Image (cartoon, rainbow, N blue to C red):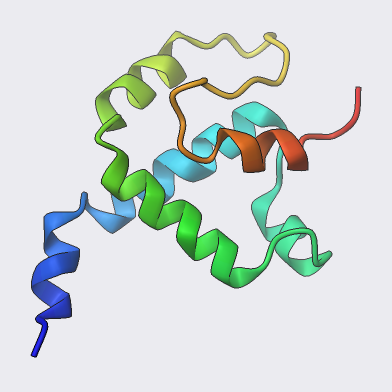
Length: 94
């Protein structure tokens, strides 16, 4: 039998990656909770985004990208983000 707990442990820390995902969403001007409530993002797709973040191996680059942003910069998503396409789809129209 496959040990799902051991497999999940091999991914990055779920809470760190959830925080990173939500921080990138904020930088993109995306409210993930509102997108789920509005039916623009399914719960399953949200979970996939977290899992993609955990397995991408770019958490240090992501944290650096977030720390380099300024409050007054336009909404943006790092190109290396595995969920960049989803964020761009959910970004408010300019």
